[in-house]
Image (cartoon, rainbow, N blue to C red; front, side, top):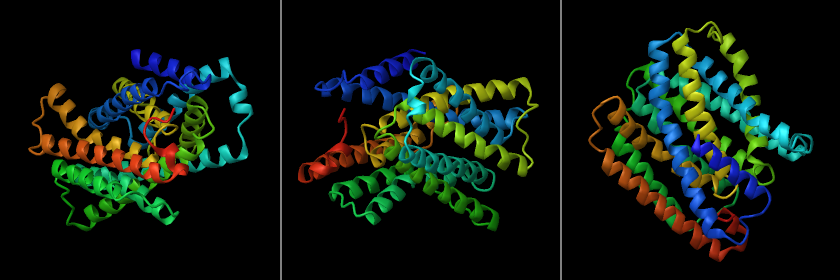
Length: 331
């Protein structure tokens, strides 16, 4: 709750320009929001696994409700305080938000399905290639990063491999799951890139409410077509959905979507890599699971890779003023 209140106050201050000229304050809050986002998405894995294993909730049912509930929660304060944010949405903003929502729905469909076909380690590692996909898309669009950016990306992805083991499946079913996980990472990259474009002019509340709402509308018919009900879950299933919505959607995804206004999509996607060691650490503390042997080494590599990428983006921004807006902390 404290994190949500802090986030709401920051959105208000950002909207009124109160952080302009106070870069240090904005950067400090960016790190707070990044930490909250990592904790949120890191908790989602164990919560989703426990909900699917111990209740009647379905995978796409969880995906639908986490988006639908979050959309209502985030839209409510905007509709009450400043409904014109929705009325004044431009065609460009609607387009990029729609693209982000479609990509998010495809990401959920691919990733959740892959978890049922291949190992969690392989699926997680392949989805985390989202950062690499973003770098590829930016290269194709003509962006030329400082050499430290791809180097840092490689170091961070190496940390992911150290933690997960990247055990690719050998059976046809597992291979199909690996392909779906890879596609999930690609759609995750499109979600971040489109969201970054929308967030250039849209507020966090209006963007996330609209994006999550459209995503829920897209997931509903997909779930029904695949025979996965959206209702009639047991009490434990609904409790799990509420916990997942709070941690993964309202805190995790929304914090990262907020950061897209002040950080590049590539940097935000690399911060999300911390979900992997974060989930392992949370499982060790709360579920008493044994930590993978390479967790601490992998965490160190991910953090080192992030530091190199931040330095590379800053160096690149010094040489090209048009890219300054993608550097860390440009409130």
